[in-house]
Amino acid sequence: MGDFSWTSQSPLQKALVPGVHGAGSVPGVELTEIRNILLVQVMARRGNAAAAARIAKKLFGIEPPSRPGAVFGKGVALVWSGPDQFLVFAPQGDGSLMERIADAFAGIASLSDQSDGRCLIRISGARAAQAMAKFLSLDLDDGVFPVGAAATTSLDHTAINIWREADAAGETPLYNLAVFTSFADSLYRVIADSSLEYGLRSS
Image (tube, rainbow, N blue to C red):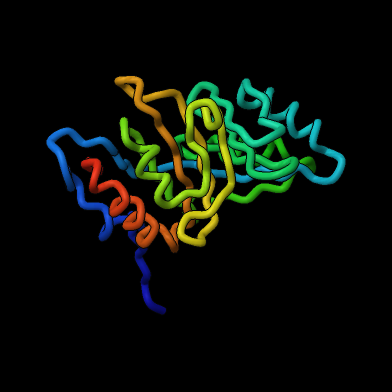
């Protein structure tokens, strides 16, 4: 029987070229792949939404959002992904957090570990919203999509999750896009191409 050895690699290894690209000497958009993430979808079972929220509060120190939005705790974000369900986003770590999540929600919620099935792309910069207006049908005005806002939408006909974190250095907006790994290469190219006229720094 053959001996198979699997090497983990980024779905953006071909598309993402580190450096500064496009127009201008000061990039208006920054794209960063966030690697080694834990991304778990928690789906409360029928009649257990309140119990799942209490468990999340005890486990993470924050309650999951009950409507489109994102809440942030120490090293973790909980992002609304549908009625009675949310995403847990955190650093991968040593795997112990996944074990604690599984133990805590046993019998109360169904879990789907999507850590290897999703690619997280972070987009920031003074012109980030203008670039994203080219490929997202969302109003990203600060008054409509402020820090803590989240949505499930589509990018190039592909479902994604997007949420806004606290502004980056220089008070520029910061957004996270969770896309399916199998579409990450082509979607990243759409995002990068839309950013070039504003100047792009990728990493």
